[in-house]
Image (tube, rainbow, N blue to C red):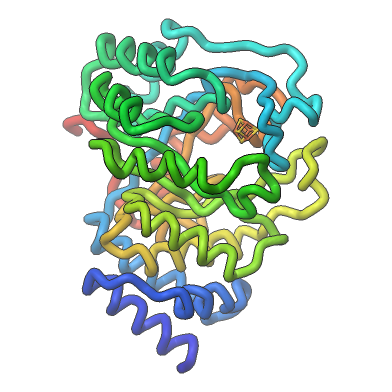
Length: 331
Ligand code: SF4
């Protein structure tokens, strides 16, 4: 089958609510990102995005709560204790977090993510969720991105006011990380057994990863019913062990985003591209991330928005790509 036939058939499957199989996903990932066929793949993915999202773009605002050394030493993360990147540790308290949430929500963020290092603690995180809910009314969703937890803790987080969990099996989990993949899987299963939704990007994608590895990590997201999916590129941060491997090109990033759009269809209607990319939004992503604070891709605690990318720029990306904008407010 030609690439164009495969792209067309994938669109039809996505719109019928059918998932793509592993072979089709790998074949789409094998299209040269610099080719005309990749542009057609991107255009078709954008058409599917219009249907399954109601043509709506949304912002994921992420607050890095604790700028701390982390004993897990993942090979791509600024916080790994062994890499010596974090010198002066710091942490945002509830008051500072609430002020950031207020700003993000007032500018139309749909998700507010509290991202912590691995051992921040579920009890403390639950209290932050409660504090936010008690202070800031609104339709926004609270997402937690933290360490491992069990079903009981997932229920407690839900009861406190969280709606979603960001959790993944990372590419080369157990090789470029010190985790047992089964421990990460146990947390995905806990999310699935709770009222919380799952957000799960294929990450952190670098030039070192094969198409089969990318397909398998994506299929795990589908297996655990991710409602939000997409692709995060690895940012080669100097001082981390993977920094010699270059970042994937913007076209390759956008191509993988387009493949996740077609492969996820209605199952994960929200598809995110991180770092933000105009091309990825044109090729089917309807979610971008605005982030601040402790960021695993940055060698310092970020006092403002990472790389100057804020809500207004995100809105401009969506408008230029022909999306409406989810603001959570009456406009
Ligand atoms: S990715 Fe998470 S677990 Fe790994 S070093 Fe960074 S904070 Fe720790």
